Length: 335
Image (cartoon, rainbow, N blue to C red; front, side, top):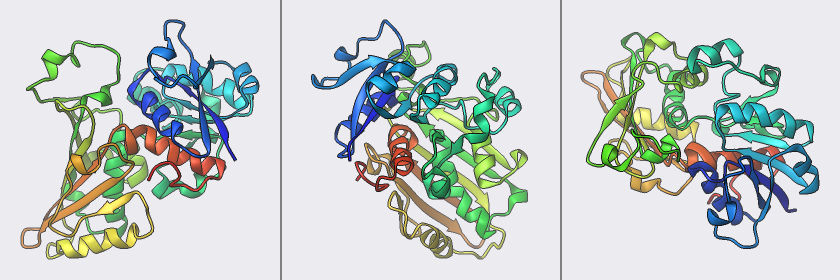
């Protein structure tokens, strides 16, 4: 069966990546939904047969849309999601509008009100490796942030196994390509500011932190996160430092924990103990690659987690969630 799927925000990097994946997906036909009058989709997507429509509820009926992907700013997602849900479409939201469970938490971290709070109880936050059962058949899915996806896939299995000395804290040093900041032109993301440069931002107050706390079950006082911008197009590499609860735990034992946890997961690839991934290995894919190095004598441990911020960190994971929501084989169109 073939479903028509709308994309709002197709002019942005994540939205364009979603269009690319959907265009080659055997079960989906993309429909570009224009929310802004100044966006001409024909100049952004070079596929003459693709359909275009306005981003409103009537398009859900007229275009026969089974689902809509919102690759939009938070406020736009809050405006459009209620309309599309009421019209019968499944909504996969790539913004942070519905990721946090309460309006108070959203206001605290995003410094702006959550204007569609009635939708929060029914929103499913889904990293499929942890939330697959809830995502199946869900009508509103909050697609996770890119940084938390890489962090939670690395941290949560070790928290559950009890091998991290939580009193010593967890440090996550995260580096991202410039596309993670979006397509809108800003001075900070301009060529002269980014090239041959390397900068940290939102230190100890990054908006993605609560997603790590929520999914991995750590306290804010235990988790230190720093995001850093590197002069590449795409990719996230996170180097995560912690102390072992039992110092003599070897990298092989930690690798076995990951292997047991992710044995049946198609999009998590594990390196042998002592080896770690790089960004080339995950570019233009929906994979998360994880590697671990430890020093049993001192109890120090380092885990490296790598994803493509536009793939597993955004559009790829959104379509993985869409497959689950519509009852399609999860890996379809992504391998």
